[in-house]
Length: 321
Length: 280
Image (cartoon, rainbow over all chains, first blue to last red; front, top):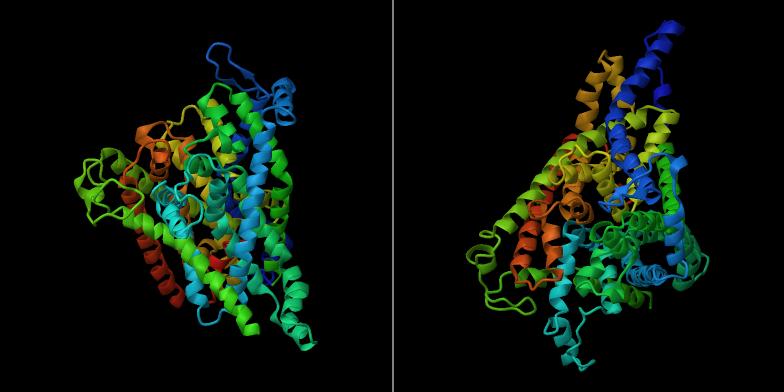
């Protein structure tokens, strides 16, 4: 109903075709004028900066200052630094950093699914009286600073912290493990803890929108609760699950602060983000840093495209209602 | 039997809620420690808030981090919200190839990993826009860039649920396009605008990557940067106190916005789906 809003005639009766055309033009100009500031802002501060990454990656290095000398003209692009970086990523010393990033993101995503799916399912489809309260509690972490939540774990995971004390009481392990010394489980737990709220909420929204009649029909036709879940609910929730996964995997792959903060910057848990940050700010190799950003984006392109298509589709569906 | 299975799910859910919030509560409790321990509870005191030279109240560094964060978030709200509202209305009503392009452009910052945005802004301010004073100004420009899209998404959802009919009625009754916008549409967008302000504030206050890439040193550090910088240094509960102060400010701001939204919604027409739609 609201999809093609502006085709609705707003002109008074008896208007001539030419005045129609003029009013259509002023109308378009009016709305375009409203969208213009934001659009220009994004061009100046999103598109141009994105191009700057390319120009630096394929540009040169100032021989004396060791700063980037970007090549703005694509005809003058020098691909040798990129070839060099690609060589280091595929088979070189940067390869294992990419593999590690992928493994951490995958492990954290698995954890988020195992914890997050039951929670989202319970709040969306099972809880009745407690749903409002639970929803508020699920949203609460959004208003708590990410780094404060990481700080909380640094407090807990100190050698004399409460995690070790609880493990000591339970007689699990030595009770004096140093968790913050470059341990991969710490990083993965940190990633799960940090990103799971962003996973649960979209999944909750998807599960909540499921057509209850399909589930009832399945139960009426004799399917057990388990088989209804496996054959109806789960398949129908796959798009929501995918969207939720992409929402957290994209930022996780660019994360560098979670692992640095939880391991005191141990090289054993370095991720791609650490390398990018190091090359751009900690050393005088902005070219390498910019090239790594491009390689990372190339890896994430499929996920990004998938998510963009999903948003665009849901926008179109919303417009059709 | 079904009941018992639901019981397990309820257990998982409540355990998750406990797990997600308990660590933060412990961190808050540690901020009231009278000693230097950041791993165990000590007797209650306000040492890290008031008395200690390194406390939130007395330390210039922490004070400046706090005021930088709040100034940044406040200004980001004031700039990103009007830009985003204008863009949402404009893109909604104006159809065409350019509009579709602008719409896709608006979606991109939502899917770009923050580090990529941070790197690109860092490079652009050191290479092209060298006239912009680096530090607070560039941080502000960066925050507006990556929060604007949230505003567009939230406001757009509300626009869809409002529909066009009220505006058309106003136009038929002789209101100019601008009057219809100001007197009819904007009041209806009230709850969505408040939700946007809230989300922009919380996102800006929470941001670490972009602030950090565009920071030029101590004077442009924000609260997340300050917390992060304790990763390698020996820290005291004063970081916990700083984080707690920030948490209280955010929750109070969100609470006020929530009450305001509820009041506005009582007057506004139609339902409001701005907050749930924000997730997609």
